[in-house]
Image (cartoon, rainbow, N blue to C red):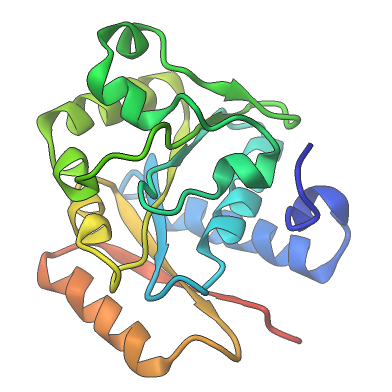
Length: 211
């Protein structure tokens, strides 16, 4: 079962859930001229709520009638399978090494119509190498052919080069900032690291706000 962190499911009338729906709408309108089929959420540091934010955003996209695949591409400390209460034994890394899973991806149906999860799978010793590979390009193409939106959860920017590598392969990136704990200098460093390689940063998402 999904955890209480999925506020869009546990309390859909809350201000937080409405904020995620507003974010979804803004993203959809921002892509009128530039297609936004693939989106990555990351953060500067580990404590910044990126996984929870992405799971909630994925719910709102699916609830609006769009077919969504949520991919846990945080191959260092994956959380999506825990948030959804499912097994993470097979997933993205399985598709990297098993040809049979490319033909039939190990997608997990969630409790939300139109929303499937691709867990991280077994954790590799070299996440950045896998994410930068041609095989990853093939996997992204395969997933985008199956869904209206493919949303990627990725390791924090300042933790490793994973987000920089994957950010270049997707249509846009959102940085998650946690009110009261995210350091301003870390967020600035993360943005600079992404901009340095010409990643398309769409904006920031503020979590844990009292407003």
